[in-house]
Image (cartoon, rainbow, N blue to C red; front, side):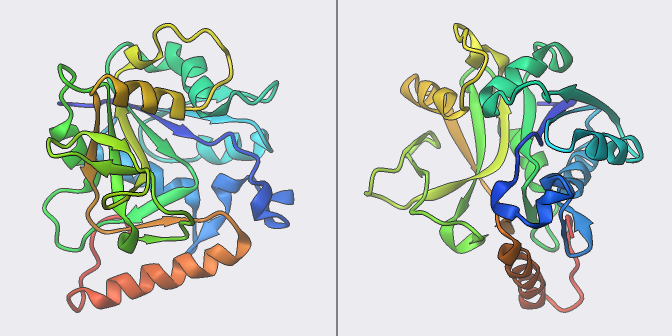
Amino acid sequence: MTIKTAMILAAGLGTRMRPITETVPKPLVEVAGKPLIAYSLEALNRLGVDRVVVNVHYLAPMLIDWLAAWPGPEICVVDETAALLDSGGGIVNALPNLGTDPFLVLNADTFWVEEPGARSDNLSLMTDRFDPESMDMLLMTARLDQATGHTGAGDFIYEADGRLARYKGAGDPVIYAGAIILHPRVFDGITEPKFNLNRCFDAAASAGRLFGAPMRGHWLTVGTPEAIGEAEAARSAYFSEQAPGAGGLGQ
């Protein structure tokens, strides 16, 4: 299906990224010469979305000014400076700007490099896969060997029909890779202003409406100053392992 609206979750404090984030909001921390949030915006530009919603909190004026200069689709800023609402509450707070149709949600502090030579990028594959009749949420997933910067055993396992279930120590774990297509009905009945999106993952999984979309390429999460160099090295190594001269999408 066609997705024309997206949200980037950018309101985190970035405490593990200190001392860098003492003066720079985490979405503007640079990896390979580019702010983290720019990777998400470029992916949305390739998809052709019309409207991007970004929530802000820490050092909000700096991020707002940077977003104002970004070329591309309309960017709507949702101010969370009064109080952080966590991942789920932040999306619900922004729903008036997102509409009633399914939309994308991306994390501002993770990104991926596309598989060189691929005919379609990952977000296009997700929009082709999403079926609002059978799905409430479609999560991009990465295998552990496709990821740099991730700590932990994994988040989900695939069931035979592409549905996701929580990883509990058995099966081949995959990581939630920071991109979702969701139908806003997943928030029906939630009245708390602050809650984590994991609550919706579990509800959708229980209803058999949580599905996965395996990522192509390499996924990177940058949580500490040391992780910047690790991400840059992994990104370079990934491209060097591909066909000579292949640049790919999402560099």
